Image (cartoon, rainbow, N blue to C red; front, side, top):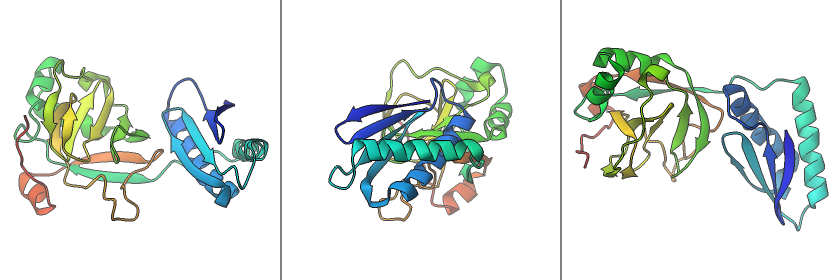
Length: 229
């Protein structure tokens, strides 16, 4: 673990050279602890797979004060391991109607469609990072038997709520956008609502489980059936 300068009012904490559920949980805990420890001196915290960017107000604190605060927080954590992280359940309608790559993935994996669905639900995923769009949570890791490469040609339009896999990560598209991940279903839960508090149902370090639902339940929960291009 190391702390480095990332700008005139920014420090970055590198927790490891790779991600893991334990590292993700520690990053989430550090975010919480630094919010408390830095208070009004803090401008923003930007977590990633194995690092955390800390932006602070130069008018209210100095580089040395913030660095010392970070070190105290990390030392205190060494004596108290981070909690497991909040568990969020997301419903998914798994079907070729909304998951145009579901049957292709099953064929490639030499599995049946129900087996693919079962494997996708069997894992408790960790939220490793948020991006490339608000609410787009990178979840890992899927069972290696259903890992699949990104599409050679990205789709021009992936619908909001699309549940997708790329390599050993899975995600739910928070809004309609282009995308090259392989689509296996659709989730009716809104992944980003700027008018809500909190604006996202998941955060870095949280745990996520998917639960299969039928077409009628999906529609009753507000799911839509737009086609994919």
